[in-house]
Length: 600
Image (tube, rainbow, N blue to C red; front, side):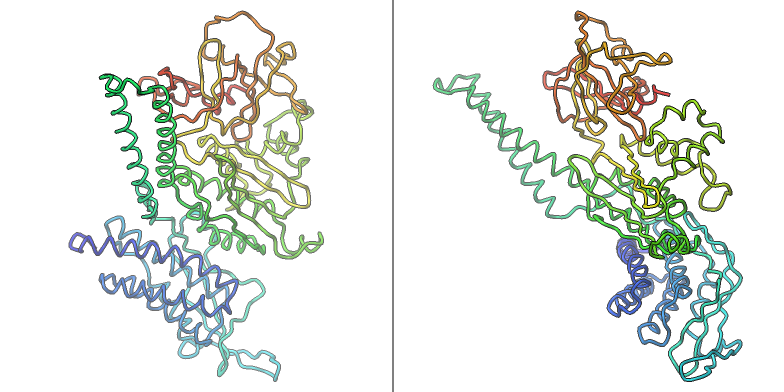
């Protein structure tokens, strides 16, 4: 079906409205499954589905109308108490919701595809007519007042349903929803019921080219631009008076000093407002995880309580777009490797239900995202043994490794502690993807684990990739910028403490041996100063690696705007870009990722 003849203004309004409703609907359905007695939440979900149906009717999208009509009927029966919410019924509702997502995504892409909706509609209709025509068999169950006759209703098989990552649920041939005659319907739960295939839609509604901006922020931006115009006029007048010497009593130095401070303040405020306009809540990424956790936990037959903290924390859109995949892999890792089965948890003196906490917060000029579980923790013996079996490290290398070094082994390509490959893990990919994506963002990964009590993966990411806080350093007479988000600490060191091991220059930093990289050698800077035993070491980190950069002098911290090197110089190793200093000189920005890659 072509959308060429549809009113484009109405179509844009429809897509915008559907995007908002579907974002809230996912969260609402997962919350409803945890609190099925929440009548107000159920009413809100019912109204949301009703609004989708109404808007689809206005636009003439028949497939959407049919799906949402049957889903609305199921929700209405839940509201009236005719049936009780069960995981099986929720599976069908979520399946219908994903069909709506896919169809709205098609509409946004400019084409309304013919999708198979008959199976989902049949399953919804089977729930809606469970007490009437679809009675297949009768069994007797023992109730409080004696035997009760239970009518079992078979839902149509779920086949040929398109599945997108991260859905990995196997297909099933049939599902039954038992209903008790003359009493509110209930669902009999078999010992190991197969589940309907989950229809997991990718996020087709996310537009990476636009950002919604609060009108208040636009007003603030306009105010700051007005202040900047006033200061510009003052600067022009001051320059004109200076040139024409109109006012002999004019204290140019004093007035220029005041103007400089005022311009600095206004520019900082203006910069902050522009950055805020690019900021979006990290909750835009977090919102899809309840569905993912629900699906995975049922596949693994584990009970998981997902807690999300700090979803209102904001960061730059460019960063948000890159952290989705790493977080999915970390959540998979926590569910599959970290959390135990209910039986294992009870045997270990824990509750049946494991806890997974996903949190975000601002810390200085960084955002810190944590994925924490109360599972079995990382078994360093098992990790090191698997790494040796796969040939990733040798016995000699293991002997000199700290606990943190062993933790870092899980980021190696091809590493997995799984003996059998499954749909969720075992292929040796996942954590390597996490490392790669975090390195692209100049971020850091930290691992904390206590065997038997749980693990925590901490991501430290820059708030924005356009303007950065940097540490200015001198290498002989050249000035370089090192992104402050990658700087862990700075040290004043006597070079006589340096040693060479296997051709690699190192020095001892507390309880670990720190490899060193001399920027003078990397950038081939000519020596213009006399040799001095005293130098400075800037310890930087990228993902799971740490390295010390040897420099001549520390200049100080400065906020810099990243400038491109152009097409001719774009692929220079170890350089992430350039900036212009206050004195007009061009300073190169060091790439901490490349520096860490010098250390094998």
